[in-house]
Image (cartoon, rainbow, N blue to C red; front, side):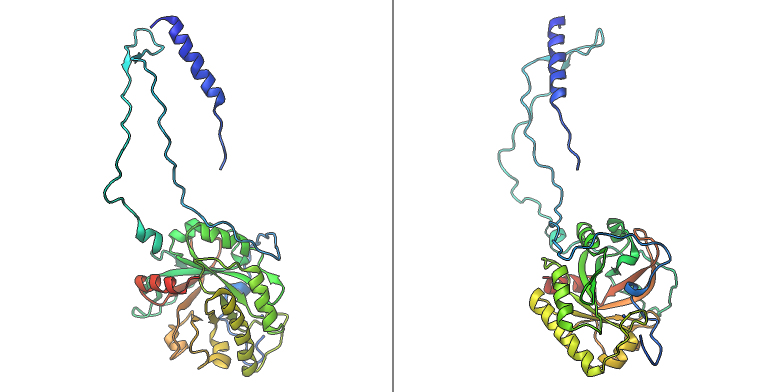
Length: 349
């Protein structure tokens, strides 16, 4: 090829390169308070990062799978060969352009199961204080595990935590009528982006009206498709500034007001989270038509809460996992993997 033709090609390549751009992408009086407390009131030794608190929470856009859009092929210049810059380099024939696909496949592949059911990761958590629940009643016999978190877990690598077996996450949102967990907004967004089934919980404060607390929760927790039912966390907390211990009747009344208001707003019946001592004093035999999430870190729920049906079991408060520094609460869903998918489909908003 003559010199003038090579020069022309080099000049054209330089011009194209210069046009290219890039883009960046609450106290028990007697007996003493139970040690069965959620991580939301158990402070770690390590410092906890803070995050911006906003009274109004806007839901981040739903995550989408990144899919590459088809790029049309540029027309190939009608040049028979291209000689390299090295002397005596033989001419290389240009490949012919691929013909356009005129007809679609008869049965295009659709990953319906992945979209509707989602992936369930096997439990790979460790435990700083492992308990032998017995082979038949071990949480390891349950197929679907998850976590619950609050600000005390700090910054979480949600994508990595999910692959360790966190298929769902309940995230501390509010307590009382004026406190928003400073990590809620971040945790809510990032758990969703990582593909976890997520829900929010409220730590109930006995020195505030139930209606005010429900309004505060609704103000801060978005109503989004696919979210798990909201949770009311009722337990004794010796560290709380509220030392009031209402009667059983008052406890049930306040809980009902709170739960009714949430159910009307979210269209989902709330889940009741509780611990053994609070359950014994207030909830035994009550709320038979509500799902329960039970804390039992030394024995199986059937022994701690005889006769009570449950959906979630919090079996450890000393879990260890890649993706989170320090300890984390571990939970299991009561059922098989298929039961999980059916329950999520029925209960998710």
